[in-house]
Length: 81
View (cartoon, rainbow, N blue to C red):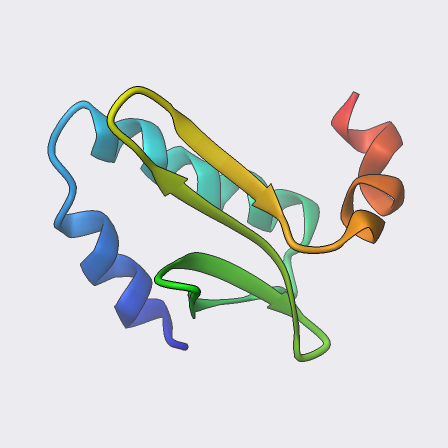
């Protein structure tokens, strides 16, 4: 998993998906600035302490944010409000 893989994934998206999706990593990193970016399960993902905690993927009609742990929403619940 590398930042370059995430950049390549995002660069391959069509507009307007790319512009919308590019905002997500910035938002995730604002909440978890020490997270490492990479690819997991074929989509951009973020690791904290070697554990994948979140990912996202654009689809035809929607964009999915995927917490990979129930702890993510619990840990950041107040900040996400």
